Length: 389
Ligand SMILES: Cc1cc2nc3c(=O)[nH]c(=O)nc-3n(C[C@H](O)[C@H](O)[C@H](O)COP(=O)(O)OP(=O)(O)OC[C@H]3O[C@@H](n4cnc5c(N)ncnc54)[C@H](O)[C@@H]3O)c2cc1C
Image 1 (cartoon, rainbow, N blue to C red):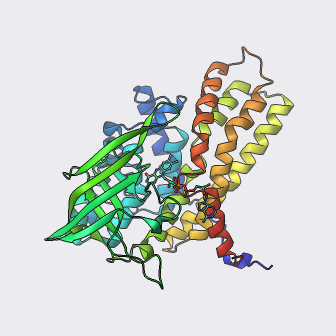
Image 2 (image 1 turned 180 degrees about the vertical axis):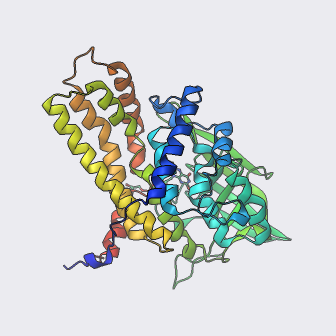
Image 3 (image 1 turned 45 degrees about the horizontal axis):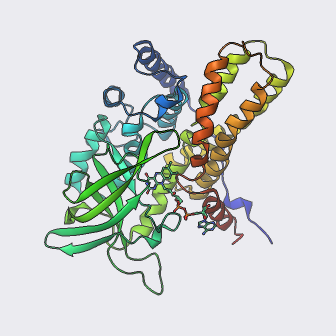
């Protein structure tokens, strides 16, 4: 069997100097918010929260829709600058969930495929931190295999009637809009991916019911969303009728390659550094050194993918690799730190907080390699990219 590594590209991209300046601005903003009591970086639950006021303040600083055109409220900055902002908020465990999906992937999809009047209406509101978007892809019988989606959009006068059920829809109970994938016609013999269309759905539409699904942590993050004759107007179709499969893959490059794909349990590493203090014993120092070296490599890879997005490329394979390695790393981190921390004195600084952080991260860890594409699916994409299947 041969595989072609030349198909994988990770350019040696360094963050340019203007990123350092921006990083200092973001850090100063975060320090101010923490001092004002908006959130606590050491409390793992805070990173999972929504904070509409904070989202609006972040929007006012110009840190949402950073790469989008100014005429839609964006700031025409680079993907590498956006990378820095994402990284700083994630490392600080800031509650940015309200605007994060809209900023990362729904906005770019609207920019590419929405009619002009929708772009001018919605994109500036995303940039101001006012709108929460959700991804309506998974269904009870269709997760990894998106193209098996059955939720149907049936043509009616002036629009479409949606019937069916989406599941695992993160934040649907708080969302203003969904970008939903619905069946508009049957798959064909030649192309089983044919027949799905992407729609913009106003979550206030009559006929949409949102039922909560609770996590093991007790948190309410995701939901079941039931559609019963929910009307969506014609101009809410995004892109090509029946041709959503062509556009879904570019969305995934945005979704899979960012620093949020290896920093979701980062507070555990931070907590351990605090617990061992400035003079760690040899075992802790060796363990920490190993983890930080791995993190540094992941970061270089993620920065590289963002450099490719900046050049207008679609690094789907490289994005899948970052997500597979990154989520595997952040998933194992709590167990690794628990092993290292077993040798700490019970009265070590920050010990109680660290134990709570490890307990929380252990409970959320299983989801990390499922959300946004499972390990097996990502490895299938990587294998195909390398010419192995
Ligand atoms: C925290 C969280 C948040 C989520 N948020 C959203 C959201 O906002 N919107 C949304 O639409 N979805 C969301 N999801 C759903 C997520 O995208 C799906 O769970 C995921 O795609 C897997 O689908 P599934 O659960 O149906 O599992 P299945 O597709 O049934 O897979 C079950 C197992 O079989 C394996 N498998 C499946 N197909 C193959 C194959 N071809 N080759 C090898 N192995 C295979 C999988 O890897 C997995 O181990 C979320 C999930 C989680 C955990």
